[in-house]
Image 1 (cartoon, helix red, strand yellow):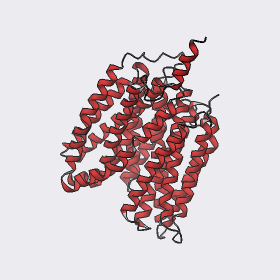
Image 2 (tube, one colour):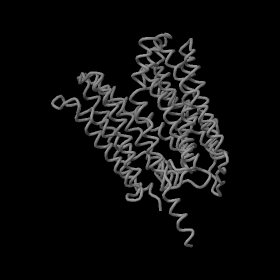
Image 3 (cartoon, helix red, strand yellow):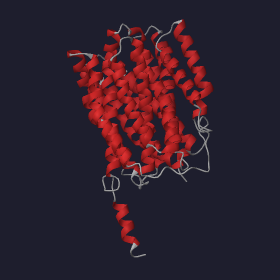
Image 4 (cartoon, one colour):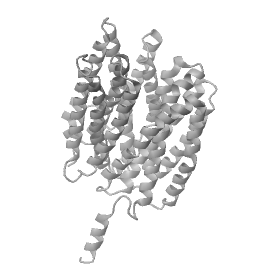
Length: 461
């Protein structure tokens, strides 16, 4: 007993960069940095590419297919990770990400560019789910919060440097150079990460679970991805074609989406179903705010683009900072309380954005809503990820991570679609446009408050 005590104390003192976990930590951090840089740097390049390829009318499809495809990638990666461990789908996602950059770089039509973005979404979904699953498999409970906080931190530099650099390269040289450059920058580090993952393949595969959750069929995931893509394209316009696409997309989601989620998700059953639902509600609120607040600042409050860019930068730093804080509260505060706190901060951010529509208040009132919402997400998202891993039976962490990814994207599509409908309805009243923003922001109070009320249903026993 006396000899075992020092060993237990030494194990408890091991951190993310100790000899036991250093290679895994470096691998995961490298993956997050590379994928974050590539994902964020591409955003300002897409409009330029769409215009050069005479496909501006199809730009909503190109911009939206990434999110739709990540649904499919998440399901592929989650099932693969449960069967063979997280490292293989993670390596495959990295290799596919490099290939998709080359597909986009060589685009001769808008449809090839859309195909590249779709494949990039598949790769992104595989990588995101594999990272969360790998963290659950590689680290003990006490290190998982800090590992997730580190993953958030790895997005700070990409969020600061990626979009400006890509914009300058596209303006001074070519949008193709952005994609080729990202592929070249990503190739060697990706190969290094793949080699490191192979060298650590001695880790035992996850143990099978006695509680078998049915693995969703690939065709179901494809149908959900198609429905998401149609819905995203449909809400970009209001003619008959767009309305038909919206109806078809919503029909596919209504029929097939539930098959990708744990039973009881829509009624917030305790445990994993409630945790998965909360991720969708919170993501819908945050990403809708992220879309409408810059639009408000630009079109109504006439704020310079540089100020809006600073708001995005501040939000990235705020998210990472809040994630760092939650990583050090895991022994002091139950996870479900951090989820409730994050949801209440989202509600406060919505109220702040609504107040920012008032001409009597400074325009920075609305901009500060993005920072407050990012703090809420920094507390909420890692906590929900940890809760989902805790609720998952052994060998089913990939399924849980896939379900979280699915509801994140479904929540984003659904909430943003409803907010867009209210926004356009407000514009149709003949007002100055503020009524549309007030209506859209007012809708966001419902899922944010609901998430705060349901947070206790995600608690662990």
